[in-house]
Image (cartoon, rainbow, N blue to C red; front, side, top):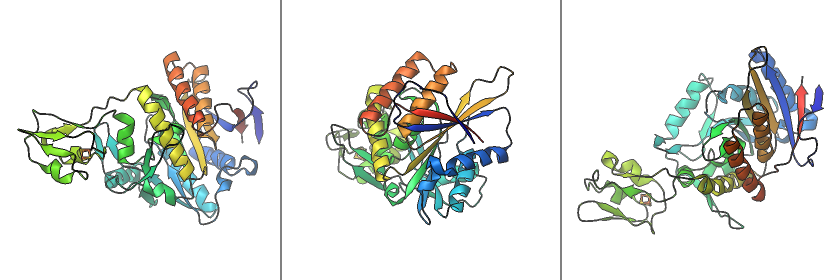
Length: 351
Ligand code: SF4
């Protein structure tokens, strides 16, 4: 193995990130073998933190253009060889007008994995309502994370870093924060207010009245009215309202999103007892000879791996100043919340 320090030589070392450059077209078996070596290398303490028979969640993100699912099968296999019990896990999508229940999510995962018989769990249940409330401390907001996160012995979080209008970079912190949130947690990320009634679309069918768990909806003269003081943002009314009579404004700003995503990521990280391994794939600029280039990052620290991703993308001219600024603000908040360290030491690893 060849490990050469590359970036951040003047920074105090507080977190370790390993970088595997992938240049040109590499055979999948060769890539899997390299990832295997890194994840199982004794000194790196990555998959080696997991013990026999421990149930370990493998959390992909389903972003494009690089599909994190490509890395799920090899990671599952490696965990299995270590004697752990790996399970692909995800949560329901109930935000930004995407409305998929747990079964739909499993179907998408199964299709992406070519149905290899891989065990899968939707951690917040079929309707996204199995959740764990984690109270915020030190001024942090409360977090609603998927209930079964507490049943996992740890997790491997596989991210495909990409630009994000609210976070700057969608990487490990966003994958932990949004990706392990319950339906309500996701709503909290993307909507700044409780749902509202569209008077022109509400035909007073009253279904929402029957489904609201806290009786926050009353009948007005010609349409229903939501008492926003009572509403607990569960999102049930928008699912049952006919003709789109109730909806959220997905109006979150970066200033709203940052504390919410960092609180959720920290809540998930703490619930997993910090037994998290992050793998992030980055698409880089093609090499001078036109060969495709990728970088695979590995770390136990979600903040450090995102900080390294930003630096690498910036060095390659793939991040605008605005995106860098947004990401740095999010990582500062994540560091202040105790999720990890912005300062890191990176090793270029080649097997
Ligand atoms: S979001 Fe939930 S609590 Fe709020 S009005 Fe709708 S059903 Fe009731």
